[in-house]
Image 1 (spheres, helix red, strand yellow):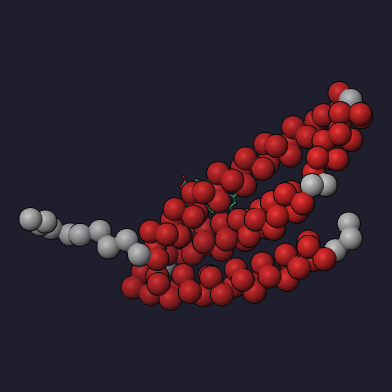
Image 2: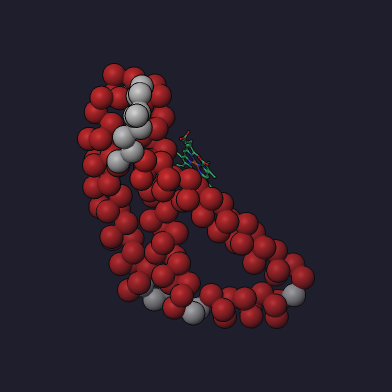
Length: 120
Ligand code: HEM
């Protein structure tokens, strides 16, 4: 029999997992991006080859994912910080998650359209 407090999980558990995954994902991209830019210092030919690989549609999808990861991590990080500072917000944390999700899609959809439709 379970006694004492029970961890309820739910939306808060999902966003905290996403916060870790997006934090590590954005960091992984940053490492990759430093390495690809550094390649130019060694060989212009190698750099151009890598840029050629990035033209693959897989990386377009990756850019959309990266944009979403950065926006999510930033908004969710601000929510975590806000809950730390203004503890009276804690009972409303689920409402904050919905506001954050709405803000994420409001920013992510138009930026994804620019990435997917833009010619750059
Ligand atoms: C607007 C920018 C950002 C904000 C407001 C932000 C906020 C935060 C906060 C508040 C935490 C701690 C979460 C917790 O204690 O539960 C955190 C964790 C983390 N952040 Fe950020 N962050 C930002 C940008 C970034 C960037 C650019 C990267 C990667 C290069 C990054 C990588 C990470 C990682 C790896 C963690 C640890 C995740 C974990 O294991 O819990 N963050 N961030």
